[in-house]
Length: 65
Image (cartoon, rainbow, N blue to C red):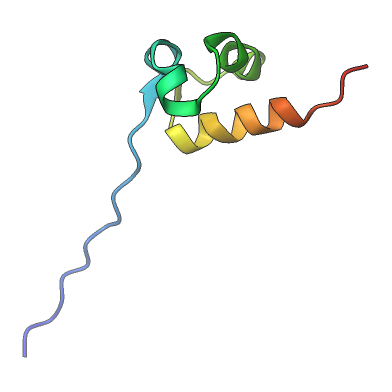
């Protein structure tokens, strides 16, 4: 009986901030300005689509003071 090889799980693709901004409406159904505001203050330069989406959701749920 052959032993199964341990195959590492694939990491999700990460995209530079500029590429996400160029495709914001198609990926997140919002304006690029919303993504830009959501990414403000975050030092990272690359994100997965899920990470960027989470930041947008967090930004949209913030209270306006």
